[in-house]
Figure 1 (cartoon, rainbow, N blue to C red):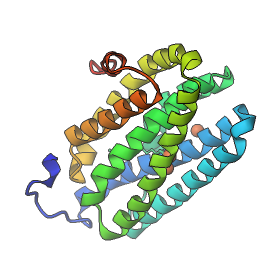
Figure 2 (figure 1 turned 60 degrees about the vertical axis):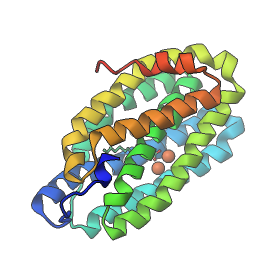
Figure 3 (figure 1 turned 45 degrees about the vertical axis):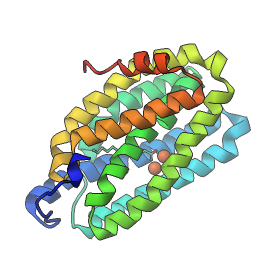
Length: 230
Ligand code: Y39
Ligand code: FE
Ligand code: FE
Ligand code: FE
């Protein structure tokens, strides 16, 4: 990864670092809050899986608390208004799908796209985080792999009847990820998180997930191409 090459010492107390952190930390806190709400909403849509989904929601709530502590530890006030705007389109798409009872679309948005986004961001953040945040993020990322696995398993078990909806939902939502990454890449860079490393890690996790649920390599290539233009 490019970020493992020699880089200038990070000053976690500098104004530039803290300014960037106020947005990245807010995105993570708001993202965890979205995830908490999304899994609780999915529990309502999937009564047979409600118990498990509520457990995932509880984990997301704990993550949110952990990242709030990371901001406090650096004396940073998270810019939550910025973060709400950042998630608004993805949030809207999830809400529309949930209102229509489209479980497959909701799972693709939360358990594949958002979880892969989280996994890539946390993996890239851990080596450059302050000691306090690193410990918290290491604990969180383990949970995110479980959440991704939950979505993969359900979609794999229901692959044939889900694939068409998955293709449509991918086409609609994957471009939003690139838009979001582009919006945040300058701030991420201030934290020593390189855009290319984030993209690479995301694509690996997302592509693997699509493969695990039953898509062919050819499908994955075609589906991954959406959004590259964004
Ligand atoms: O499932 C989860 O816990 C996901 C909500 C959390 C998403 C976190 C979003 C991270 C994006 C940060 C981008 C920084 C470069
Ligand atoms: Fe929400
Ligand atoms: Fe989480
Ligand atoms: Fe999660």
